[in-house]
Length: 495
Length: 95
Image 1 (spheres, rainbow over the protein chains, first blue to last red):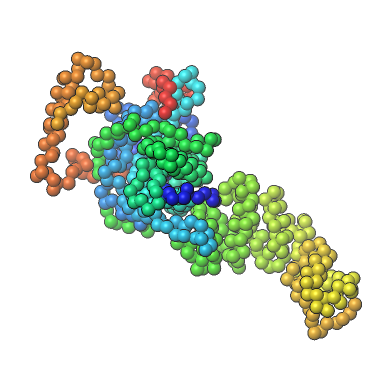
Image 2 (image 1 turned 90 degrees about the vertical axis):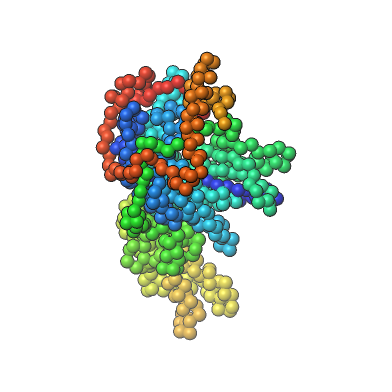
């Protein structure tokens, strides 16, 4: 997390507009497929192409998914919503307008809770959502060299989106990122969006303004587009706050504008100012009737809601005794929570041990390999096998890490790796006693010094036994036997 | 209120219509007549009536979320003035 600090004396005001592509099979107004990665224009039918005489028919799946989102953030689901046309000319928008919801969006209000900082610095904030409306995505313009022309792929045209508009409730880049991450988690938990930011399934625009601390009126804002990762969102907002504060502190003024974030240069660049902003001439779409939802339908959707991140994090704390921070990390994405839950589904699993491994070794491995958790080379059932062997004393944590590395690199079964590498921890008391006795016999000077009060020498003995055991002795058993032999009343004193 | 020449030009520009000098007066007269008609809705007696989103007093039927369209690229592109590699080609646009 960035340790960015907003310039002293200033306050940032941030609102986000998030476009989430809905995971329907077909498009919002046509029966064409929405699958990603098809041949260009292979999934664009007459409706998507805006051919004369065709009419849109609304996809129930899109209405259901948008409503699920509304229910998840405790918003009002409009019993009557309607569609409008947003008119502009661009070649990847074949109809000359985007069908969207302006006057009567399907989701009104709602809020999410975010947490920033950790430990004693942890703070909760409520971020209000203004609205979320249904609309269609545009196609893609490819500006590579087609003999000086632009290539148009309309496969994406008509893919359902919800645009989630927040209130300007965020006051730092960190809060904005936490909010975007929370929305990202919610849509994935709901299974209504795959959340893939690289493929453009989840896109964030940020409205940023600054004002002197204590001021209640909003400053002039800039809208930043083209932010396709949480890291870039953080950087883009940081850059924009600095740019605006610099302007205002040097006697300039902020001009309302749209800016593009350029990750290569780590700066935002002017795209257009308000003067040449588009006038979209919205009007009600005559091709679509009002969408009316009855209570029974909405309640049936409510019954579909899965356990959402906040509820899950609460349960991890109460049921498994995890800290708020750990519970937050494990529930931050649906995939991580699913992995964790698959690990602890094993009989006798220790949730705290599993949590430490998922957030420690697993996270480090994924970080190193730049993989997502659903691509983890050590699947959840293998980690469960491994933790079972730690639980039953076959492996120490240290040997467990060695097995984990082997699983990551070569795969195979936990027991086979333990066997092949001879990693079995020595827990047999007789064997450990023999090693302890040898160490005591070989170091009479240290034994005398220890018994004379040099307690710190205990570590020396542990080290010697471990060395003799090539690191494989059960540390707890070594401690117990050593204590008994060195301090015990039944000290045999045999040397 | 009646439409000014500048407003007419703005609207024409948004609609990507080139208005020749000789057309201006006729277009302004026609558009003003349309605006006058729409102005009837400013009648205060209509304030209490909720605007309709659609002239038909019916609600939207929904379609099941199934894929019913197959690849029709060859047919759809038959009328395209320019194409390459399955893409429609259009005059260069960069925002």
